[in-house]
Amino acid sequence: MTLQTHPQILGSRLIHWPDEADTEACARRLAASAALRDAFVELHGPLGAGKTTFVRHLLRALGVAGRIKSPSYAVLEPHEARGLAISHFDFYRFEDPREWEDAGFRDVFAAPGLKIAEWPDKAAGVLPVADLVLALRIRDDDSREVQVQAQSARGLELLEELA
Image 1 (cartoon, rainbow, N blue to C red):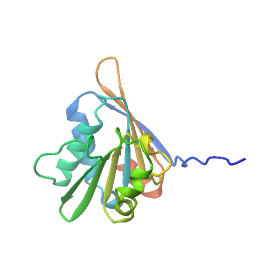
Image 2: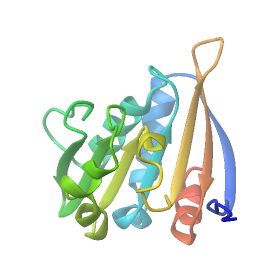
Image 3: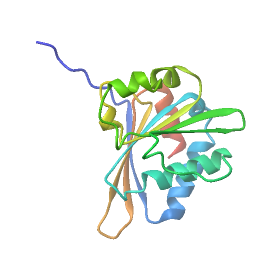
Image 4: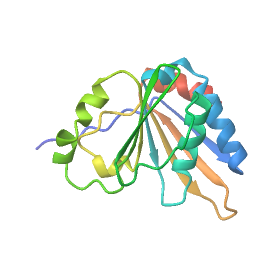
């Protein structure tokens, strides 16, 4: 019998975003961290929870100019800002793990730079362990509750930036 191993949670914090301004402020704090340069960040939550909105604010805070669109159909949208390679994944339509190899995603994850993945559960089994996991939930008052978990030393550093 093979036991499945789960990433170790090294730290956790619950954050409340009453409105989009709070989402943006959180993204700015995270963008200010040097630890973000080679991090892998996962975003979980239902449709409309604010995953892509958070990514847009994060990318703007990192200096990405121009249109920032959701990679729902392309799966990957590459960006660059201030010499930082950024790979924004959306695995919502990801269905076959063979796509991982065929699309060269292993090489993308092996290269330096920030990786951000929406709907990472759709690519379970092929993704590396994330440094930081944000699970967004829509509250009854339309605000957002975000459970943030650090799964690496880098993730712990990033978690501290969100305090």
